[in-house]
Length: 307
Ligand code: 3PG
Image 1 (cartoon, protein in one colour):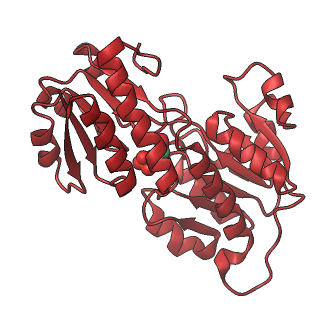
Image 2: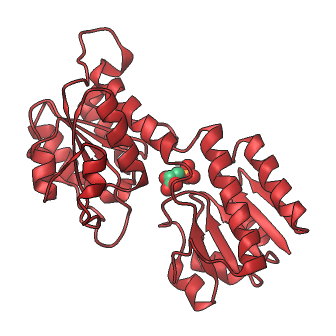
Image 3: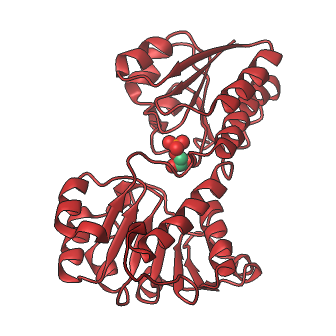
């Protein structure tokens, strides 16, 4: 059995060592394709593998077609919008993610980004504190929940909106106010931290109306996906409201233009780094390897996302 780890953005060495141990202990062979620069390298590498571990690497219909023996793809991380689920399902290939495994790293970055913007991107000048500010969590999943708890620990007033979490005790347990609409969340938050996945429903769903409804001096923090932002609406809102700020871990398609026009009111990391900690790499990478071994041995499909 061949397991390929294909990571354009490689895991930390300790994570790769751990994955290798799990795969080889099971009697399987580990293949490694790291830092590839061309799709052709991925197409060649998947040709004879039975299992595939990826991060944000694009598992397109073309990749699936080239992977003639493929039985399982595990996205070592949360969002699986990079995997063509329909193409996998059509071939009977199981797709899984590793929910929660890199959440703490992303949550810590979200808080760090708030402080970074509150302190003038760590350049001279008077900043502000996040203590006492209103933090709105948009989607209360694994990451959102951790951001909420960290925000509370920092003395923020935290509220959250998640249309898929109907059980109010989830919010109550964290001392977080549950709001009933996305409009209410944005209108009442000095900081909004985005944690929605990129789906047909959420694409370009955050734009001019929501941004301009935010209070004076508000900041939108995006550690989710660039696709959920309506970039035209974002640009228009920033142009109209000179007090608004936007920080993202996934550069916008129009990032250069945004930075040129709005200067230090916008910021994007050079490369998505939310899950870029040794801990998150180890957690997600080892979970992915274990899920593959478990799937082949026992048929466990607990984390399958294309059921
Ligand atoms: C995720 O969905 O798990 C995060 O966006 C992390 O993505 P990455 O593995 O490409 O860093």
